[in-house]
Image (cartoon, rainbow, N blue to C red; front, side, top):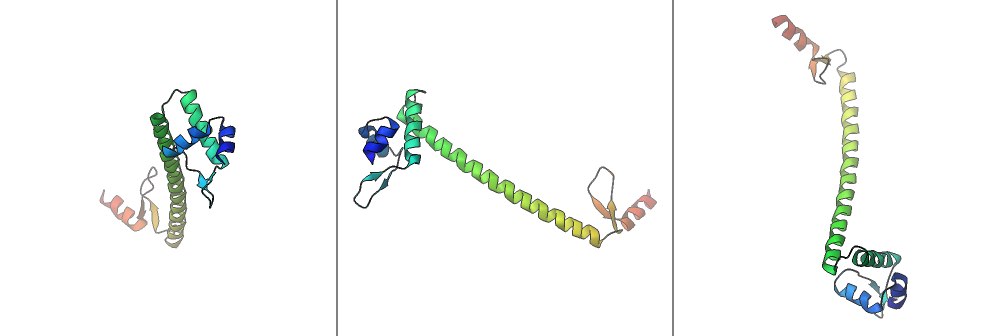
Length: 131
């Protein structure tokens, strides 16, 4: 309830209502319309209070910081997904390459020691005979 959340966040209930109107907080509602605050909501209220009190931000600044933090979190999640996909694709490619190497054993050799390029040994012999 709003009175409990206000007490936990050490602010006036009217302040919570104002934050809700500004979209800074979105408590759940009971079937009868009572605001229901979670621990996450209370933590967010404390974060807002820290930014206004300790950092001297106005509510527009707080809104911007919260939006940027959400964007950063979304970007981090996306990066983790991409890193996971990259690892999976790399493992698949390495497995496929190992299969190709086993299949063509003796037919493929490295073109140069410093290269990962593979060529058929017959083509490499032809190339060296021409030079």
